[in-house]
Length: 194
Image 1 (cartoon, rainbow, N blue to C red):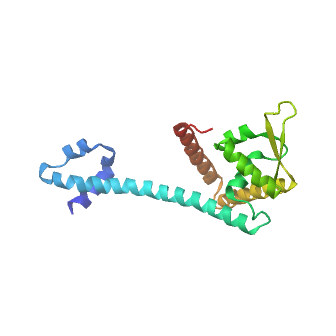
Image 2 (cartoon, rainbow, N blue to C red; image 1 turned 180 degrees about the vertical axis):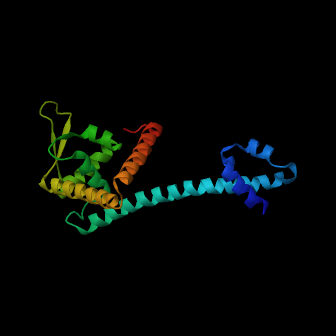
Image 3 (cartoon, rainbow, N blue to C red; image 1 turned 120 degrees about the vertical axis):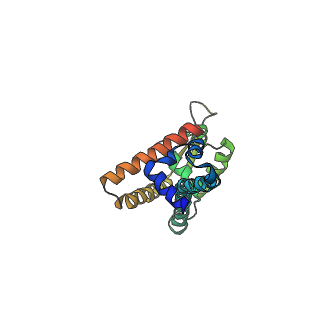
């Protein structure tokens, strides 16, 4: 009974914003043993939000990759892996890319990229050539088939965004954009991503 009353009062007084010592001082010494239970309850309230957000983010990322993989597996580009599709996406259309810059952008080694590009060449998605200016530099670009895969992947992501935003009004879109931007900034700063 006391815990319920204390929780209601604490919520009204915003007591949960205080630290452990403040709550302990506020409590009567004869009921300090209930302090741990109260803190656990407050922690659970806070933890549930953290756990929910964590679950949503983990599930969202996994689902997007899973959906993307399933879409790749049934269409015209079913011979591509997710990794290969992301390499195609990074190469882009209408330009030649330098192999070492592409590897750096993808955060993989040049050797790993070389192996993947070898496979993409065999499948007909990418062309590779040495630079005429500097024979050490290797250039890659998408073939017509690669451009088709790029556009299909781009359409997949557009559909994903449109489907998600259809559920929201303008204010909801703004809030979502702000939240995602803040998450993006946090990860860039914490993990030094571009």
